[in-house]
Amino acid sequence: MNLFDQLHPQWQQLLETQSSLITNIEKRIERNNVTPSFENILAAYQLPPEDIKVIIIGQDPYPTPGYAHGLAFSVSQDTQPLPASLRNIFKELQDDCNIPAPSNGDLHRWSEQGVFLLNQTLTTTPGLSLSHEDFGWSALTSLTAKIIGERDVIGVFWGKKAYELSKYFNPKLTIASPHPSPLSAYRGFFGSKPFSKVNEMLRNQGKTQINW
Image: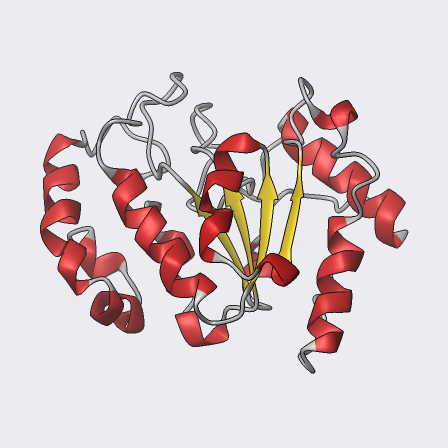
């Protein structure tokens, strides 16, 4: 299966103008030396746009082999120890909503409720962060953010890089803070209460809250 075919049919229709870009990116990827694995590169796009209630934007996949599986910040179910950023996300979740840290870092449980977990760059070489930053992914993910922002989706932006895409979203539906990485979490991510804020916004929209 080629990359474009990994998109949900609704996304194929909305991103049809990007098919040649995706094909060109595919030509640059070494199928046996990429993370996430080739079949999971567009896993986030299995969530149809009409079901998206919240988007959380990340930077690029975890470079550690076996960690990334196509959803931003998420890791495979058996990954231990959890990446530091994800541990900090779970710490804030516990402080914000009094929810104990989950036993694993697989965030498909969020995706299934309408949370779109999108990295701005969707691939990297195992062991190397940001090695595919110049592949053209940003054009695709920026258009994706624009499409989603036009649908009154709540945007969650952690860090300056992610915040660049906030321009596509209603400011009243935007939640922004420093990144949850150990380098910046103590500068305002901790205590930002993104999870309870999202659910308050969803209540105001008359939509079902996320069971974080």
